[in-house]
Length: 177
Image (cartoon, rainbow, N blue to C red; front, top):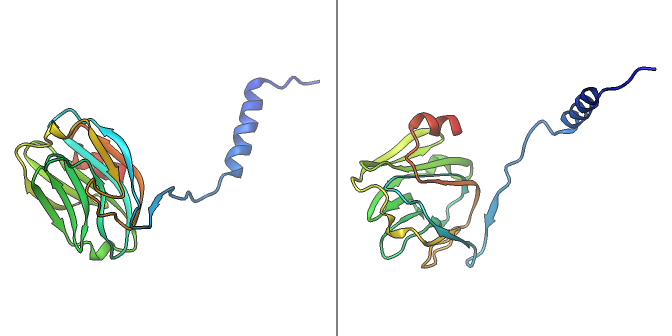
């Protein structure tokens, strides 16, 4: 009688698990659908003058903000008012989202202390000079997803929201996309 080793058992279990997995993964998303949609995701602490925000968005013709920690004009706000807007401490980048409406789109917004950069699906879509980077006065203030602190909810879907205290490089953004 042969003895089955734990290595062989682990290999058999792993093979069974992979065989049962679907071949296409679904993106888990938060859907903000009503005028009261959104959530306070607690306090944001970035703690540097650099930041990167990445997320996947699905938007239609909606207006409103989908992420913000803006407080007394300090911090960031991301949203739509016909155009996509990345605002950081008073400086803004506006991008026409016509080509990516009604599609899942990867958005990355970077502030590196000299400029703000918006990437759409891994490619640079807009830049704006910003020599101050991220102003840490917004640290400790609430981060709102699906709305802004002053209202203006966004009728959209969001998945894989990430916020860093560093300016990620174009290569890192493209690799993550």
